[in-house]
Image (tube, rainbow, N blue to C red; front, side):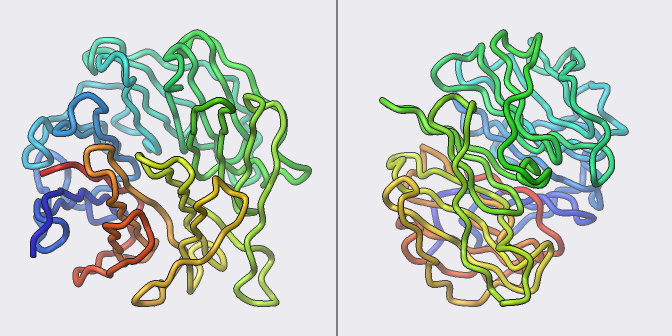
Amino acid sequence: MAKNYTICLGTIGGGLSSSPDGGETWNRIRSPLPSECNVRALAVYPTDPQRILAGTDAGIFRSNDNGVTWEELDSPMGDLQIWSVTVDPMDAETIFAGTKPEGFRSKDGGKSWEKLSMGVDMNCPVGTPRTTNIIVDPRDNRTIWAGIEVDGIYKSLDGGDSWVHLPDLGPDPFHGDIHGMAISPGATTSIYATSPFGIATSTDEGESWDYHYFPKFNESDNRSYCRGVAIMPDNPNVILVGNGDSIPGVTGAIRRTTDAGKTWDAVPLPVEPNSVVYWFATNPAVPDTVVAASLYGYVYVSDDAGQSWKKLRKEFGEIRSLALTPS
């Protein structure tokens, strides 16, 4: 039976595809996005779940009709890799885009853009650093968090005008190779970040971090590699982490906690992933549904907050981004 949600999926070399029926059928977007472009970033407007942003290597695009049609926003990012996009949940006119390197901010809904002067260290161990995550703090939209691959976490307290580099997440530079980020506000707010080493948690606004390391898949592996992280919208104690033997790896897992990270289990998947589990998508309007993708094209869907999963029949090339919206 078709589901009442839409999945958007961005790839490397295969552009953007969308499914209006929860993965039963798919539409390849061919215009104005180039059909063979790279789509590394997707974001849904918090106040309007029919509006979606796509960050590509050919610029930034927006759909106002749940992914059916798209428009290109005029921006200075046409020749940059866009690695993350986000919309201020309290001011939909404010958009952030994380690029290679640093990023941009628009305060007028994408009509004009300012470059963010973050002060990122350009002496990155893997070349030019990439801003893989930008999060507008749900407690105060003047506070912006940015995760850098490979330069740790930066924070702004003035809406992105100025930035500070937070303390190192660990002794190895790759402890600060930030892949995924999430915030769980509460009596004690937790900041989560994933890296090749595992998932790090801070309960003191990023001043210190505790790492959780997942089991290795093979004795010879250097570490248990992690990528995306997602908090279930209606239960912040349930967190998912995309895991694998390496990048891209030959196998992967979805790690799940129901006690906010105290204990973790690998969830049963109907088909073993063919690479690291790279990314997730959730949406408060579809609270128990979560979509996950392996880097090499497998798509999994859960409708019970990640307890059980099905693999979609359709497979893709290299998947880098996901979005979930109500249909």
